[in-house]
Amino acid sequence: MNFGRLIAGGLVLGALTLGAAWFLPSDDYLLLPDEAKPLADKVEVQGEKPHPPGGVYYVDVVVRKASLLEELAGAARPEGADLVPAHALVPPGSNFSERRQQNLRQMDRSQEVAAAVALRALGYDVKDDPEGALVVAVAQDAPAAGKIAPTDVIVAVDAEAVRTPDDLRRLIATRKPGESVRLRVRRGDETEDVVVGTVPSPDDPKRPIVGIQVEQSADIKLPVDVEIDLAGVGGPSAGLAFALDIVEELRGNVDHGLKVAATGEIELDGDVLPIGGVKQKVIGAKRAGADIFLVPAGENAAEARRHAGDLRIIPVENFQQALRALATVGEKAS
Image (cartoon, rainbow, N blue to C red; front, side, top):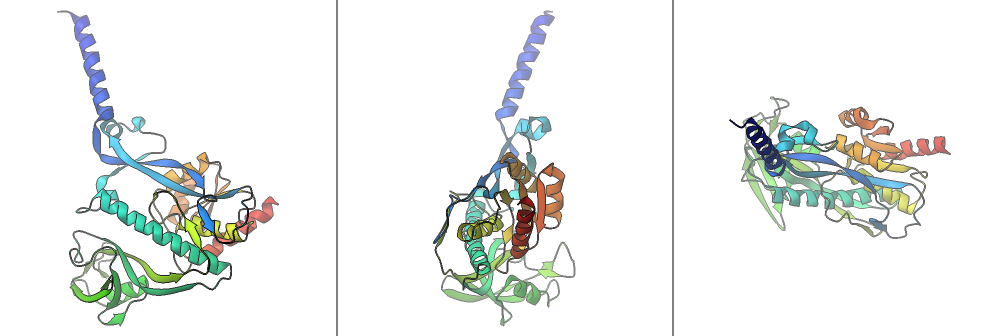
């Protein structure tokens, strides 16, 4: 028996198997860091000032299919990558194309809301009348599936008006899990009543839910033109960065010459909401040489600090707090 040939054949077979595992796709996905990028040239505001040194940076996360090797061997994954199952990114019954469209709609909304928040903070008269709860996602195994769809706007529950997502949650909470609610839904120019059942919330069995994710729907009229173009980046998590950059463009001296990275979904009242991909975003901010990184307070900030190293993390709950924090940083830097 020629053991040399057997060993050589085994090595070749092993190499071929390893090569195949590198190229064969997994059922899972990787979340990867993407270097933070400045917003100055991506945001145009009527009456903006010249761009000084420093600047506000937004952070994003790259999502791609993992290879079979990357799924099986953590050492094969790029630095800062996290492996996630497909259902964590796309709910069952949906697909990536639908999720992509949802993310782009969220991006459009976050830009409009961020502009309203920033201009109001600068003293502009901004019209932003709340119009109901905008449906952005529906769980496929929930009572609302097949009855409510993304882009629907819920304007009433059992004939009581809904102007905000909090109104919707409060009114549904008056029911017991298992009872039905009548939702008045606006679709385009038409409105109809839809009866939907409820189930217990996974977080609180005593609280009824219908299985939808909602955001604020509002008629926003801006007093100045604001144009933001991130070339196809989706999702709502750049809202805080947008709002900070708009103030920087019009008033200046928000960043005090520092590289300020920021992440967080922003609401019309200025509240900053949690986001995902914190680990990757911290790495992206560090790669860009950011001096400070503003993140939503709570678990997001705790997670950011675990990966920050020398990068200073500033937790914020709302936009005014973010502005005050930057002003304090600027006083120390000057």
